[in-house]
View (cartoon, rainbow, N blue to C red):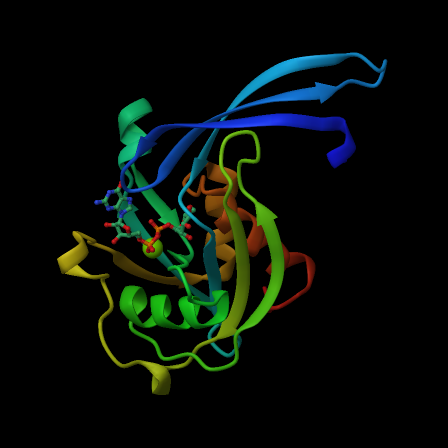
Length: 195
Ligand SMILES: Nc1nc2c(ncn2[C@@H]2O[C@H](COP(=O)(O)OP(=O)(O)O[C@H]3O[C@H](CO)[C@@H](O)[C@H](O)[C@@H]3O)[C@@H](O)[C@H]2O)c(=O)[nH]1
Ligand SMILES: [Mg+2]
């Protein structure tokens, strides 16, 4: 691949919470011609997400929170029902990130997390790769009410619902978040939870 790309120039358009780059490069197309191409790339690091499930109860745990980028384009859909998820800090690992996020956001101390999928969520614009996990949860793992970090202006409602209800919520359009749909369908395809 790299023999088809040369003369890469990076220009920082914004460096704040995350970094927005404009990347200009020469790209060799299949007919052999070289053309100058410009693409923007938004870098806020990589991320993790997890489906928490309880086989005995047939339930899962989701979160519900306000998402400004959705409000900005579609006010009616700004409350977003999602699996517990968190961005990976520099020098942290995906697995320790998701274990910490589960405790912060939904109040459980989980142990056996299993990575099931790695996915680029929006490869035309974002550098982010998501590491997606599943893990069983039970009452004895509950350590707090969760809710996220108030110091970070998070306000996360914890939802414990039947797995079957979550599948219906994909059909009805109540669940619209990609990582959540991927994990719920992973659970369905692999019969993770009886339904
Ligand atoms: N100041 C500031 N803070 C921000 C900004 N964006 C996010 N934050 C803060 O950064 C933290 C992000 O919370 P996480 O739980 O780590 O991530 P997330 O928002 O749930 O996102 C997860 O899912 C996304 C995909 O749907 C992923 O993009 C992301 O990596 C992560 O996995 C929150 O404390 C939030 O306040 C911003 O633009 N400015
Ligand atoms: Mg989060």
